Image (cartoon, rainbow, N blue to C red; front, side, top):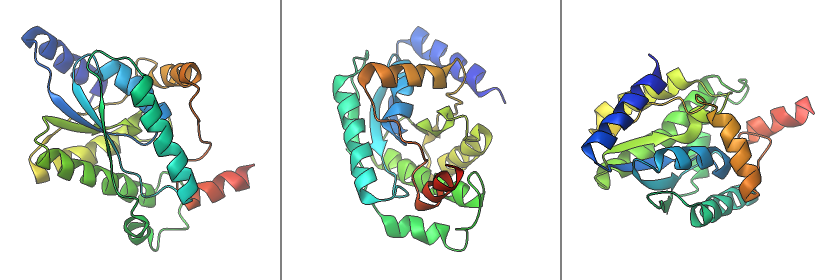
Length: 205
């Protein structure tokens, strides 16, 4: 499926109908969310949901969540975004990663991590009566948009709330996120977040 083409169709329809649906946007970090907020803020009333219990250590988590809040406060978009912080539940991440610690990034451990975060987003979207939920994760060149959309669509059926399918790296989304990061002086981390990706980054260096 061409996710960008389908998203363009939806956005055109919303514009013609002059509707502004409520979107719960799971954000992995401020830099990745920058382009998505700029892009979708024209069409949706967005609430950014920061739920990333995979991040290690806790000081890194604190640094990233503060960057996210700062960006939301400073970024000017058509429909100003709200913010919700999830729990920093390290036990939840460690539980899904158990037995998969040795795997490379992008493997089964990462897929379970995506689902952990998207499931929390789906639950909150259902409880908050949002029209859609989605994630910024697909903007990364290292993330598999097909698998993310498969997980999101499955959870959408399970919880009864629509998933906004996407591949935000399209239309130079990743490039634009780098530009916006420089514009707002955002901290850009050099590893995904968990202790295993941190170890892998250290080894590469």
